[in-house]
Amino acid sequence: MYREIIREIRERTDVIVQVSTGGAVGMTAESRSAVLALRPEMATLTTGTVNFGDDVFVNRMGDILSFAKRMAAHHITPEIEVFDVAMIENAMYLVRQGVFSLPLHFDFVLGVPGALSATARNLTFLVDALPQGCSWSVAGIGRAQLPMAMIGLAMGGHVRVGLEDNIYYSKGRLATGNAELVARVKRMAEEMGRAVASADEARSILGIARLS
Image (cartoon, rainbow, N blue to C red; front, side, top):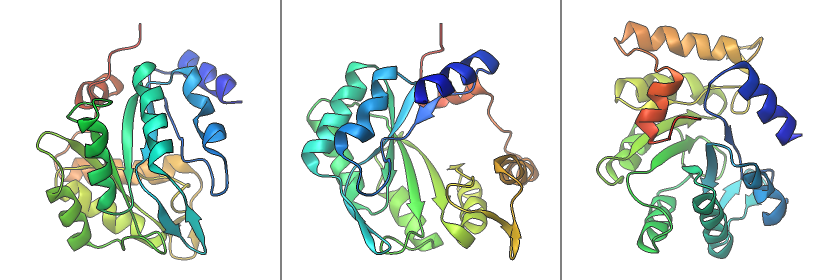
């Protein structure tokens, strides 16, 4: 299914194709990493274990290292998924092991029950913990999506929005789709004087080679 989706996307548009190795709680590491064989441009890599509501999202260091080595072997740019500050430290371990090199791109996922709450103080704390030159984005879960997007834009970062994190456009009103949530953040960015990057501009920011 992933193969068909990626092929269709690449036939219709030049956007960056990023897949997830997060999968779902309870999936095996092999199932989660199988998609890397398709060699997408980017893939998420969660660099630590975290409480996830009533469940636990398990990411053992051996599995993290295995995922990272497969990404490096296929020249896949990682997006380091961070639910807590220790995950930044674990990403630096991968750098010290020579698997990845700086700068890296980090995505801060805030507001998951059991992980770091979605506050300006926590976001600032995480951004300040990054090595110089690294890029970052922020995702807020549920009602935190909009305020985290606003704060992230104001801080000079990038923003993740969409139905994976939040299904509402406003209180009591379901979003009609991802496009509606993205369009709102685009308007906010433009009001702040921050132009939305084209696909190739995003590749330049993230250090991704242009597709041949």
